[in-house]
Length: 376
Image 1 (tube, rainbow, N blue to C red):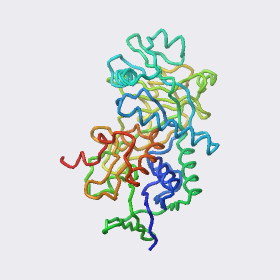
Image 2: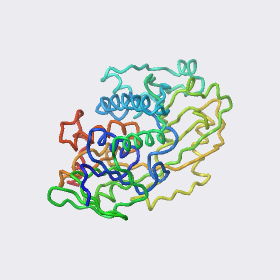
Image 3: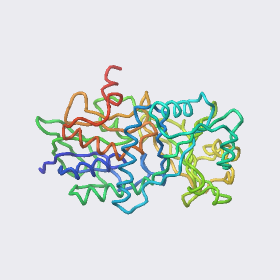
Image 4: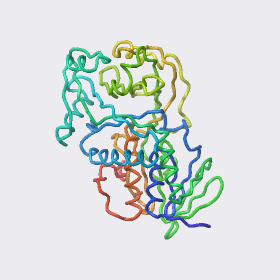
């Protein structure tokens, strides 16, 4: 049986980045993925993902997202793929809403470039957005959009070029720590490694079954709406946005990158496993988003031209899982989850490599320790 320095289970956004960084560090690496290279079954697809630095979820994320940004631009230069595009970003809503208040606090505490815009200022600079008179916007000039499929392909190619083995269409059945190694049994073979990295996205709780992680799978739909005038909705003119309008819902959007303006929202149907998710799209699923587009976006038709589903893996506190298994130091449980993690995939791969090499991580990972749920 071949022996590896690291076995990576799941090759979505975080897993592909981990395989790339591990192999680039000279570690003998194998990655195992139950689907194809890029697929629509999990959380790492959708043609665009928002990148932002004025992070509503708290200042703890800012050093990580700044490093992630550097790594995305480096990957873009290396791969000659469109990986990241700066558009700027607006976080819109009432001044005391979660997204706006959080973004403003983070930007202020961390000294980030930002502006607080009143409705008239937004209307003058960005007439695509119809704010209410009681809403404001935080302008994040460093925000933009990632192309997730290109990110995964570029990391996967880089991992292969660095000597990694990547196996697709192969599912993990079970794993066990045996003395100084971890044995992984799949639908095709068995592998032994010094370290196991679980980056299985919505399947994290299934692969790390012994932890009984309190993760909830949330189904989201992403919709694309045609531009009435693409000059106003192109990324050179229209920023990415997050819109917090309680008690309705939190909405996000990406300008027209070539196939329409993308709009999605949080608060979808939930399940305990990906297999239980109802992925059938029904007209009523789109109605709240259609109403939002009609009322709040200018130059965009409220009739979608495309739709796809996406799965969020939500932790109870909505923070990531990045750390060692509480019982097995050779096993890392890694989920940049809760609907805001893809932008961190590049730096998560770098963090994983440092942990496998038993090096001190460059960030405070204590809020993300998987063991925090052990005493539930």
